[in-house]
Image 1: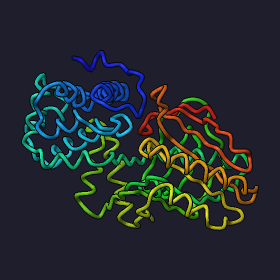
Image 2 (image 1 turned 90 degrees about the vertical axis):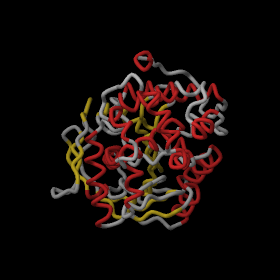
Image 3 (image 1 turned 90 degrees about the horizontal axis):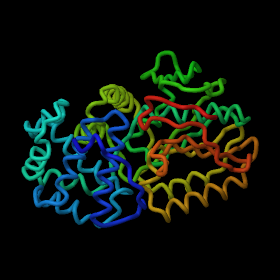
Length: 363
């Protein structure tokens, strides 16, 4: 099948037009194939086969004439999420063999027909970026805190997360982590996370999170079954461990909801940094698989605000920035951290699976 030979193509993340759409789908096929998601790879491959035809009605017509940058907008995952939601809701039985992993040869026909049958239901899925809140990525925030503590930063943290979605990572103080043999977190944890660790372990020493709040332009309310379904739809169907983590995180978030402001990342960062820092607390601005969805001008504004605040940081009131984001050149996810008053240089601590299955530590 086409997905077997799928390969990455270099592309400007802001490129537009039908060729950019084709490349975005091809890259998504390769990415899913390389990260243990053959079903999602098949879905994206079948959808790419519809790009040069007339099947798929208004949904495919909008995809073909996409006005934005399809790679930066994660266009393939928008429609893939909508189709998965149809399956999870039991709305289209013809999709069942695809999501059962049977790899039907007529997948493109099944998907085209489903898109045409559920056009009104699917079109809204194209309106906004995927909500890929993933508890498995919180290992990165935990490892960053351990590393920062080893650099001399106070081990009491105020966690400020950008693009919090449902806030699943904001409740990480209730999770237990085993990071290469370094364990941290409560014994009676809501969830235990132990990625396959490669390389030396991160520094030991522990940490506490005394404050955790975040922002999102469209927060997900997990008390709403429809919004919870939307979050599940963005989980790749073959990755059952992710569903188990999501269910545990949903239960925990419902028990004690995280603090999420409906706010842009730029406004949130400026608001957080305007508050006087507390002595003995490390302020940590963090995000995972979010940076690509923030407009370039806003990213520049956030960077400038953090760097300006960093000049005022002291050993008693340090400021840190941790990101677990995709490297567009290597197509791999990296954990990088910078902090002040160290000087604010970036430190690449690890390369990792996008959903936290494995970590290659370099810190």
